[in-house]
Length: 377
Image (tube, rainbow, N blue to C red; front, side, top):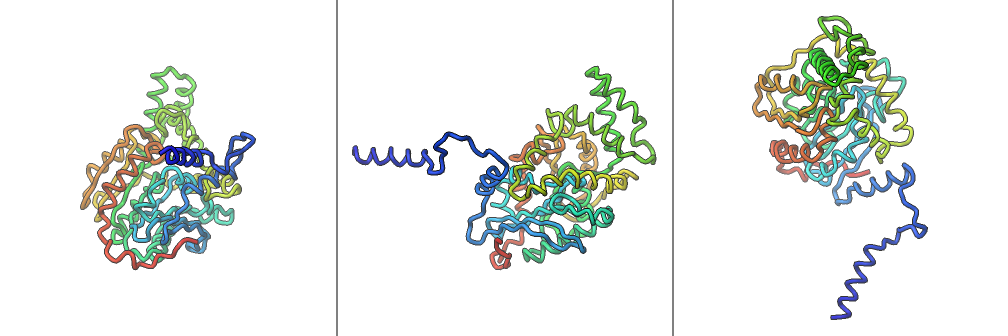
């Protein structure tokens, strides 16, 4: 008995005293390189048929980076379409999408000119029409690579405009559409955001905010062009009052996580913000030019993930549209402690919703093991 107890104690001690522990007591990681190795190790896919791919793909003549991660090639595909324009999701997915690859084949795509896909030569090709053609081509590539005719599509913010358009034009490609921070009418959302920020400024006696917001009034009214500088000023105060991230002055906590992405090189990280600025400059004016009419009827199931406190893209407006929408199935989930960055603010609730509510709609599971998905590289 004594020998058995002693052996147990030694086993526990051997587990606690790791062979890689630093003898000099140095606390690590001490730099980005060491940090991303740790994160990459934690999320490494080791299942025999697992997929862990990250590669450039020719999409309509432009090199665009795509990640595919799955523990099992039989998992239904979910394509994540990031927001912004240019606010890439791939480099923060190590945090918010933890566990997704146990249930889905998760595809992340850095859109033309954004993130890892940044290329100064592509600047003049950044148009809404081109992005619509690109998402069609990406979906075609994903369907061919995974040999799955239907996929789930999750669009966040600007990506929700692209995603909703795909759901309208090509319902045959989708098991269901998931909108997170759904955009339905940019100009009306902008107007509501300005009014909310002004109300908060007056309630809090913030004279600087009142003065700056008044300087761009009337904001997004009629068909007048909305200058990018006015958009940034409106966002400055919407963010400061918690309309982008609940109970936070901005989304810098999420942006900081990009530096810890094992999918991004140092050069990728340094280019993220430059690429985002260009995407906003090139694409946002067209989005703000006119109010858009969202579809009133869709032929696919539709789910919305809305942050209760989202003012950056009006959750209230999205909910009003959703109430009018006709679809085979629809389900609205309120994330009560989130604003616009709900996937990062409440990753658990978002994940549970995807697994419990969305995943069951993938009825084409028979024979998935023989689909021949290309393995890890």
